Every structure is written in structure tokens, then in C-alpha cells.
Image 1 (cartoon, one colour):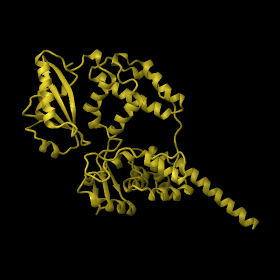
Image 2 (image 1 turned 60 degrees about the vertical axis):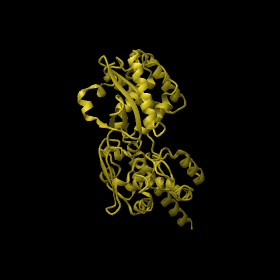
Image 3 (image 1 turned 90 degrees about the vertical axis):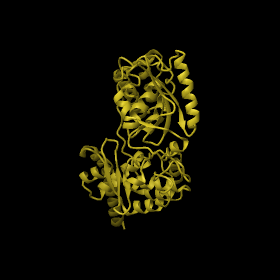
Image 4 (image 1 turned 45 degrees about the horizontal axis):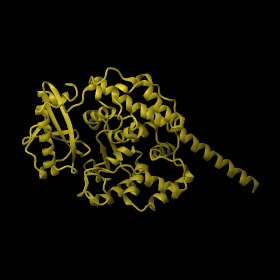
Length: 396
């Protein structure tokens, strides 16, 4: 089990951790960074406070016993106070003294245990979409999460994704496969399992989605957004439409990344792993300037709490989106389709594909060129309107 938490067991890594005489007031004030920060409590040996880039603060207990790492997640702040975490750490120390084992043997490790390790030790720090990955794991693999990893076979994985395929949810099936494959790959690298059974499962062939807001839908959609009662949701969807940036990056937008005077927004890390500087339109700047009146309360442009300070940015807004679509009388439009809408209309104005590539933060021209199909549909509709007008005038 030394590989279980080996990055906490080495002397070199321990030197990188910060020793801190923690108090409740200090815990409240500690701020997140770009990477996970670990504070070892100087009062209770083994107690560590981890602060994730998302702002989450987690108490854990770490101890090396006979060259084996023992780790237990105690709880999250603020649900658990520092004193309560220290009490739990003392009890765990007592268990070790009595010869009890805290970490699970490899053969008892469940899929949920492995997923938690993957998120805590890798994804939360390295993956921009980590928040969605947490949610998707529960959605896709909640039924299997208590199975020992030794029981996660190719057949188990194939059976699960087949359930989505039978419902014609090929995108969900492939997303479920991609996620479980990443988790199991990480487990193989950490020698928590020998092979990755997901490697033997193939993805389903998906039909490329080309849905975007059609010209005749634009007015009703904007009207429904502007009439939605919650301003945070209104502003969020408009920024999605006016920038073409991925909704995950917009959710995580921070005030220290936005320069209202220069009219720019710097994204430190996008889905493709690179940074991006977004040039903001006048309409987007107007929205952000209005929202900036509350920037003293929260570091987030779109905070998790609508009217109070919070350490988290906004989460899912699918219910709000569903209501907006119903009020607009529009079917089958995803939030991500707003990104495609921006790109499509940008191309329709004559913007070169290379510029659209830069606007969207794509690495290649080929990635941005996929939106050309939507433009072809728009051109076809325009041609039809022209022909209709000619015929009407001719009969006239």
C-alpha cells in the first residue's frame, strides 16, 4: 500500500507541505491557489488540511506505519470544525497504536475509493472539468461504485454503457466509458490494480451534433433569457452566447482574471490545457460591469450563492435553462449549443476560420471548421428566402 498515498509519504513531498499552527480563524481565512495546498497541523501530528483550487477545504489524517501509508478523509470545512477534526485525528491515532489498519487492503478497495483517490490526487488539481467529473461519476457509475475494483471487469463496463446505448444516449455512453477508463488508468499507474478492463471496450460512433440557435429562434430566446427572474442565470447565459466560451470556464470566471478597462478576460487553463485571453464585446462588458458591484463579496463572477459570500462558483443551471427554453418555445437546444451559435454567426459575418479558432480557443483550424456545416444550413435558408421573394415579386 505504499503507493496508495506515496506522494504524502516521501520526505521530499513533506518538505513541500506547509507546517501551520491552525486555528479556526486561520482556516476560515486561508485562500485557494492554482494548485492544491496542504497544511500540516503542528498541534496534532498527522492532521492535514487540504485546500483545493475550487476552494474546498478538507481535513485528512495521514500517517506512515511500517513503511505503509495510512490515510483517512475526516471531513470538509465548514461542516466539520477544526476542533472536531482534531478529535477525530486523535481517535485515529489511538486506533493505529492499538494495531488497527486504517487504509483498505488492495483487494477491498472499491470503485468509489479508487475514484476518490483519482479525484483527490490528480483530477481536482489537473483537470479543468473536475467538478463535472465528480458529478458524472455518481451519475454514470453510482450503481457500481461499491464493487471492489477486482470485480470491475470488461463485461461490467460494457454492460453499463450498453444501458445508455439502448436508450439512444450514445454521447452519455461514451462519456461514461472515457471517465471510467481515466480512473482505472490512474489506478494502474499507482499499482492499485494490474490491468485496465476498460481498454477492451470500444466507443460507440456518435452523430456529430450541429444544433445552433436558428435566426427565427433568436428573438424568442433572448426575450426568454431577459425575462428570467434570476439575474445571475440571465447574465450567465448571455455571456455564454456573447463569447462562445465553454460554460465550464464561464462558471469558473474570477474577478482577478477580468480587466474591465482593457476589455479582456484571461483564462489560465482551458479544456485543451492552454491559457486563453478573451476579447470581450461591449455587450459582455456591460454585463460584467453591472455584476462587478458585488465583487467585494466573492472572487467569482458567478458565485455559488446568489446573494451571499461563498467559496464556490455557480454549479449546474440546467433547470433555469429548461425553463427558459420552455418559455421561448424552443426544443432540443443545449447550453453548449450557445458556443456553436456564436461560432456559426461569427463565420456567417465573414470572419476567417483562423479568427474563429482564436475566439473559441481551439488548437487547430480543423476543430473550428466543424461549425461550417451550421453556416451551410444558414446559407441554404437564406437562399430559399431569396427564391421565395423572387417568386412572390414575379407573381405580383
